[in-house]
Image 1 (cartoon, rainbow, N blue to C red):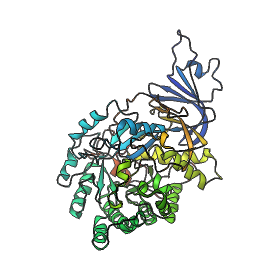
Image 2 (tube, rainbow, N blue to C red):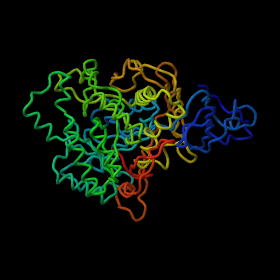
Image 3 (cartoon, rainbow, N blue to C red):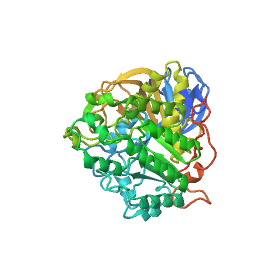
Image 4 (spheres, rainbow, N blue to C red):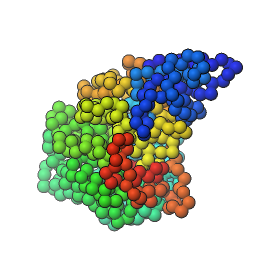
Length: 519
């Protein structure tokens, strides 16, 4: 990819700060040849292709030109499920390294999870959290708030623009002491979310099921036994409960990292029936199966556990058919030393934000080789950009390449294979479960709000200025609940399409535009 200054003389100031020229642009309508003109960090216009930029065309009037010839230009990806470990766990990851991994993978916006030390459960913690990140992030960002079961009423105290989504753990986690185990607490959370128009996001595994098994089974000593200690039953019991409560309270409910075919079936059926539920699948559950455990061991010890090939096939079907609303990385790094502990003590999680596009694009392309990238990339962009933006209150600024939106762009060679190696890992932990795995789609350039924040150089890349912004949720429209967002009302409307430009929807709840929701 070639970059050059514009050709305008000093007497004629450039009307555009940036022109992305000659690429195939992936928009909600499909893929089309176009130039993208950028002014003041926003997309000013999509223009007819301008050729080589000589003469008086748009390139002659741009301060900078990115030559995207032979490349696809996607909207900046939105990873709504990352753990950048700040504060308290920065020996594993921090915003400077995590955001480098993100932009190297084409991600320009992330939503960070609350299970840090301390967890993000108090509104007063928000200002401190933002101060720790300022000047360190290459990506724009938002947070999912957590909930302390001893202070559930604190959900009401979050200011507008901040408390639009709450992440709830139904199963124990060593960094999330606020696990919700009592039905009364869960009902109170749903009631407050309904009152405030907030979205609830769930780690959906039932601790009661796991505790019962732990009483009668010894702790696993082999990775191959781990999935039996975190059985699919635990996930299905929890998810069935969430579907029932979502229907009762009419609260937008997003289940993260769905790993089993039974959950996908249940959630798709519930959504088709008008219940306000959506779900996420992850890059690792779309990639790995139980047969990989003997090879990768602690690197893919995860919660939820890696399942079998029929589960993976069902998750891919959910992606193809638009049943899965989002694809996230669940970027959860641990150090090499932590992953080398004895089997029962190995922490669950893996890095994945840098690898997200490469692994998912490889998986999609290999499963639908008869379709062209021009057809498939809009489907992928819907799951990795458009739908997260719509679900999580970002669609007025992000998620698609349209005039007026933030100039978040990814220039990618969709046909180029690549392999992750330790020297290419930008996550602080320094390792990747995808080392040696086939990946597809080399990110050449990542642009965030009109600024180049990553350029591929054949080595570790070059990075821009870490001036990522906190993204406040939109103001609550008049007539809606006060402290959260508009998601609950939006989810109650008619079914809409699934984000594939050529395929009608399958009865899912309407995409709620700028509704405030996260996972």
